[in-house]
Length: 108
Image 1 (cartoon, rainbow, N blue to C red):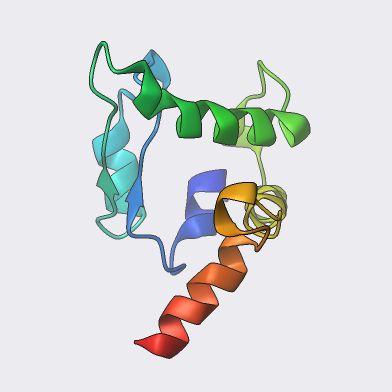
Image 2: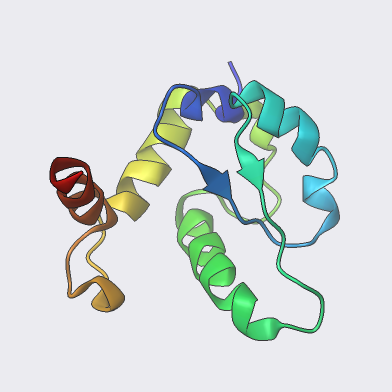
């Protein structure tokens, strides 16, 4: 199974990728992820891309540039997303995205 299927069933509401050709089939990816919305940064709004570029850099730590993602296994993709979601972030008061998500879920 390819990497996109690894996210199916996870609490994913939206994806904000870069504007490159790599996301030309975003509609197909959205369908495979159960209708997850794709939002693209607006042209000439570089501040919107900072978060996307930061995430891309984290992903590239485990998937070097040129990686054929059709060959990535579910376990490899899960490992990368777990690494990103379990990384403390200054903007979150040095909590992880998973910690903040759990807090939000328990307060709802």
